[in-house]
Length: 397
Image (cartoon, rainbow, N blue to C red):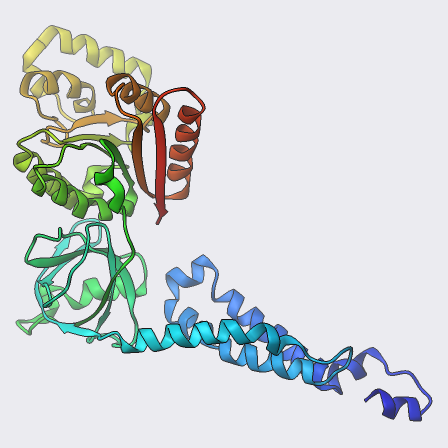
C-alpha cells in the first residue's frame, strides 16, 4: 500500500488508510462488531432481551478472526496477536470439549406451583447419581421453549431430599415464559414440558459448617441459596454450629414460600441450631411519630386485647404479641421480626459479646450490591478490633 503511494509521489490520506487497506477495513468492522456486542451486553439488555444478548455474544469468533486479519496488513509492524492468542485458545478449546462431554439430563417436572409475586416453584425427581451440596446451582433449558437456551438457577432443595426444587422469579423473558408455560390453566390437562438439566455448579456457601458460629444474610431473590442450606442445617442435627439467618425483604409476601421453609425448619430444629431474624423494610418509613405514640397509648389501655387492632397498627403490636405467644403477629413464625433495615454493626457486636470463646465467625451474604457492601463494611469494622474475626463470603444477585 505504502509503496504504491510512494511511487505516485504523494502521501496517503486518512480515508485511504481507513477504506483502502486491510488494516483499516478490518478496524472499522471490529469497531462495529464491538459496538453491537457492547449494546446487547449491558444489564438492561441481558435482562429484557436475553436472546439478542446471547446471539450477539456468540459473534466473538468473528472478533478474533478480524483481529488476525487486522494485523496481516503489516501497516505498522509484523502481526504478533497470534502469539497472545495461542494459550488462551487452547484453554478455551479444552473448556468447550469438557462442556460438550457433560451429559445433559432430560427430566420430567412432577409439580409446578405458581406463587404470588411472580414466583414459580418447579419440583422434579433427582436424577440418578446427581450429587450436589446445599447452595449450589444448575442450568436448565425448557423443551417447550428452546432446548438450547440454558439459564442458571439456585437449587432450593437440600441434598437429603428425594426431589429437586427451583424457585424462579419472573423478571425477564425466559422466566416469564416459564411461569406461563407451567400455568395449570393454560396446560389444559397436558403434561408438564420436560427440562434439560446441566449441573450442579459452584461451591455455594459450603463453608458454613466449618465455623462454630455462622451468619447467613439473604436479601431479595438472594435468599434462594439459603433455602437449601436451612433445610440442610436442620437435617444435620448432630452438628455443633450455631447459625444465625437474617432475611431482609421489603415484605414477606414477596417470598411467602420462604416463610414455609423457615416454618418447617423451626419445627425440625430440635437442638435450637438456627436463630432467624426477619427484617421488613417496606412500611417502616410510612408511619409518623404521632401515629406511633397514639397506637402505643392505645396498646397500654387495652393490654392483651390489642389483637383487635388491624393494619397498619399491627406493626406496632409485634413486640407485645411476640412476648406472649413466642410467635410473630406479622409472619406467624418464631423468628424475630424487625421493621427497618438491619444494623449489621450492632448485630455483629451483640454476637461478639455472646460468643466470646469463638475465634472466627463465618458471614455468608447473598443479595443486591448495597446489602453485601454494608455487610463487608461491618465485617471490616469488627476486624479492626481485637477479638473475633468475621470472615465474609458473598454473592450478588
